[in-house]
Image (cartoon, rainbow, N blue to C red; front, side, top):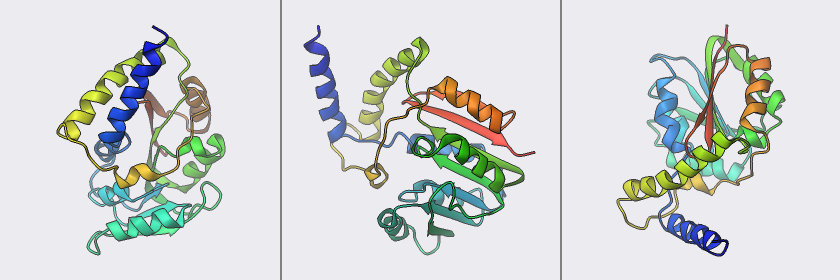
Length: 218
């Protein structure tokens, strides 16, 4: 059994390397549904290749994407048609973020790279009254519930890879070339700190090793 488990994970790694799909992009449409049509200015923190920033134009205008990596920003600009009203700027979060205010602020799979409380305080200060913050983040597995969700995600991860790639091998999406880092905070840590900075924030564990946070500025 001990020999079989590592072999299984190696097989899964090979399978997903050949059929990658973007777990973060899986939540993009969900993020859009959190924002009312006609939302004003939006800021996407850690925009990467700009996938979400481009989608945000269906709900918000203008849209600004920021990232600390000039190479990935060049890729975002190259992938964004001139007709799509998104601009990109190099900026370090949280200290170097544009001042705003913004009616929507999104942050996907970036918060665990940043000083957590400081970043949330910066997000709060950039939101206009009534503005919406939507975060999709990563948390360190800690509880039995986390492990159950993780096991469910292992199975569904294979199914989603087959569905999204139609069973075929596929190239790695541009958005999946960003640096990765393990999450250090547990979901309980995250919820406690977030509610101290953002009273009334709604947090939920999600599949595919993610959690979501939604907060409306008073």
